[in-house]
Image (cartoon, rainbow, N blue to C red; front, side):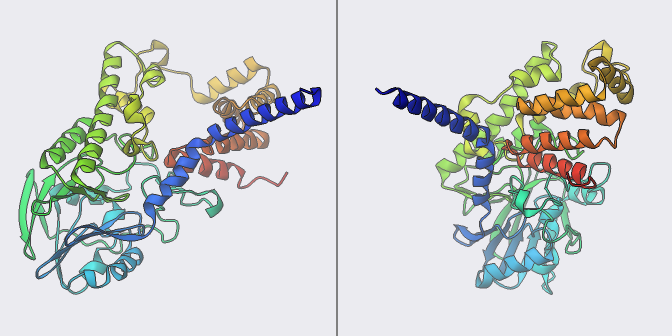
Length: 446
């Protein structure tokens, strides 16, 4: 082979490996892009007389046809979305609406009730715990807008993991909420509405007020937010309390025991067919249980959070399952949430009983490294080496000492953007990018 041909071949191989590395770098982001297909607008027939509207709102709305009217399960984020869904249902929605059922208290499920109620005066049904939860929504936590990318430009936004968008077009509102007129506090409430037999099952999971709707004659399960096509958000980063994995597992066991032939969650598309439904619910239960069991076992051995997250993973078959991809919740966040919920903030290291104040620690570290200029030089080297977490941390030390440090802001913003572009998790991506945008917002152009 001629020497030039060898060189050409070597260059081609090098380029191939480089392209492969780049593709691998962004594999998570591309999976997240593909997840947007879950939210394409559609009215899907789940079973005879049961339809779900997907993609018109942050959450799905489910229509159950009865002989003397209709039942609505969840009502969309706001009146604007609810009107679009009511139009999409068209003649499928048989007047009057006899009942509206809330699966839980989150605003994206309860914000369009006035549109579906109209002048029909339907019963509004929920668990009693929803009534207690609604006044507390949004209190004592961070603003959740950044995890949903509410302020991001369209060019930077992909989706919100289990929904296309939350509040980016129409601001969140409680304008369309209607308070329940009927509640229950037991584990089950059997009903017949408009000639349709229903069972409302108390199934705490993502919320403590969560219920599932079961149609025994049609074998259709509506699990609200206790199941969807993404790993569950057991430990939210927006400042909410961790959700109980034990309760979630028990609720999924209850659903599996029903033997549903179709599952219509309140986010992502329905699962049709008994075998597929059972496999999906089983994987969801097993995924949560695996992370819980591994975490508790590691804690018994004295492992701290950083040690736990270094080795706790889903088993390969579950990690590859389409219903356990980390588009929304995350394994690492779940581990940290379980640890904090079980044993509190202290990780067992005596040094951390009364740690140095953040500003004092940063000042000492910057001096140890050789000053702010040397620190930021190391941060730039970390960026070049694609060590983005380390670059962001180094920039933080500088910003703790000098919150107006322009160079540190630019470095941290670049590091967060690079981390975002490599994320499969929509919440993490949106939070990274929102934080980067805030850092750059008031800076002069370079």
